[in-house]
Image (cartoon, rainbow, N blue to C red; front, top):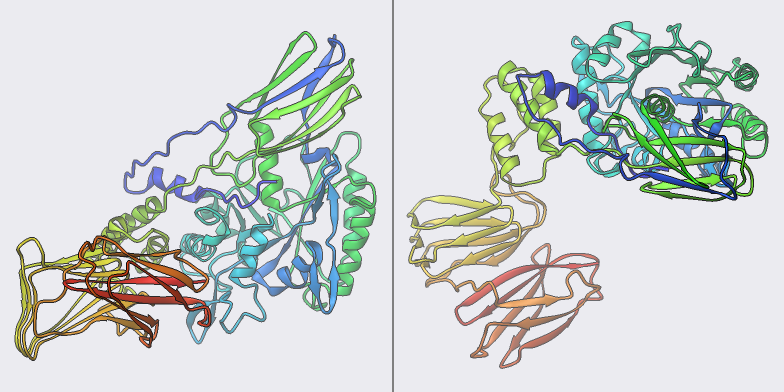
Length: 636
C-alpha cells in the first residue's frame, strides 16, 4: 500500500500551462525505470504469458462508497467500524478482504467534502475541530487520520450553496482542503475526484478544465449501475453515475447483482453514496449499514469468496488508468523471466499500483522484485503466479509554485475570489524571503481585502544600525529569528524620553554601540506565540530592560544547553569565556516568571533540574561581563 502519499496538485499542473503565460515545468521523473520482477522456473518454459489484471489483486468486481457533504458519519461510525475502532461502547476489528497473497486489507470509503458552512451570510470553517459543526461534520484531524489509512477525500464544492463562480467553488475548496490537511502527507493532498453538488451538471466542465479526472453524480448514465472495466470506454473526462443509498435500498442486493454481472471475463466497478449511516430518513441507520457491510464482508470479503475490492474511487480509477498506460516488457533468458515496464505515466497520482498475472508451462521456483515500495505474490511451486506491485511515482510540487501562480492571477484580475485562493497557498509556503515576497506582492494589489496584520511582514532577521530613538519617540523592531543591534562600529541609541521595544522569535543580540541614556527605555522580548510588533503578544519573556549605559555585547559562542529539547534535566556549559568571569543565570517560564537564578564563579558547567515543571517552552538568560544572550529551552 502507498501509505501517506498525496497527489501532486493536478489542477496546478493544468493551471501552470495556461495562466498568464506561466512557464514553470516540473522536472520529469521516471518511476518505472528501477522496477523489475524476476521469475525463475525449474526448467525453461516453451510458452509463457504476462498480463495485467483488469482489477487490482485480480478481483472479480470493485466497490466504492462515499459519504456526502462531509458528514461526521464517515468517521464515526464509518471509519471506526470498517477500519477498526470503538463506537457506541463496542469495539470493532474492521472488515477485510485480502490481496490474494495472504495479506489482510481493510474496507475503505471516501468523504465528499465541502469546506465551509454559511452562518448568518458568513462562511465559516465547517470542519474545525473546535468549531460549531464539530459534532455533525467530520473534522480536519479525523480526515487526516483517515487519509493516512488510504481513505479518500473528494471535492464537493465550496459549500452547500451554488456559488456565482463554479470554477471558484472548485478551486477554493481544493486549496482550502490542501491547506487544512497539510499533515496528511508531504505537500498536503490534492483531490482529483469531483462530486457535483446537488447533481448540478454545470460543475462538470469546470472540474474537467481544472484537471479533475472524474465527476460523480446520481443523474449520469455512464457506469449505471456499474462499469464493466474491460469494455471499451473513454478514460478521459469521466462523468460517472453513483447510486444514492437510503433505508429502502438493498445494498447487499446491489453487490450481489454486481458480482453476478462479473462473469465470462466481465469485471464491474460500482460507486454508491449516502448522506448518513446513522439516520434512516436520509440514509441508513447504523444497524442496517452494519448488517449490509457484514453481509458483503462475509460473502465477498476475506470470510467469503474474497473476490471483491472495496477501495476509494480514486484508487480504483487510478489503477484502471495506470493499467492503460503501462507497457509490460518480458524477456526470457533460459529459465529466468525478467519483467520491466515502460510508459508515459503521470507524476500526480496518489496510487501507483499494478497486478500481474503470469502463466507458463514450467513450474515457478522463485519470484523477486526490485524498485517497488511494496510487493506481494503467490504462485511459487506452480506454473501460474499473481504479483501485486506498488511504487511511488508522485512528484511533489514546491509550495511556492501554486502560490506564485495565484498571486500572479490576482495581480492581473484584482479579484477578491482569486485573492482568497492565493492566500491559502501562501499560507503553505515556509517562512522566509520567498514567502515575504509573495506577501508583499499581495499587499500591493489594489481593491482586495487581506487578513489583519497580513501586510505587516515580519522579517526572518533584523539588523538595527546607526539609528537614534529620540525623546518622545516610541518604536518597535521585530524578527522571526534574530535581532542584531549595532556592532561593526555602528550605533543604536535610545535617548532620554525615548522608548524602544524589540521582539524576536529566537534571539536578540546587543553588540557594542548599543546605548540607553538616562530616562530612556529599551525592552527586549522573546515571543512565544508568533505575534510581534503588529499585535500585542499575549506571551512575552523579557530578555533585557533599559540601562543607563552600553548594553552587553553578544557573543554567538557564549554558552550552550544540552540536551535541548530535554526531559527537564540539562547542563549549561559556558564557552568562549577564557577569563571565567562571573556568570549570572536566570531561567523564566513562558509567562516571564523567574524560576531559578544561579551565579557561576569560575565554573564552566551548571546542572539544572526542572522536572517538576510542565512540558513547554522556557528561557535561559545569561550575562557575564560584557556578554549576554537569551535562548529557548524545550521541556518534553
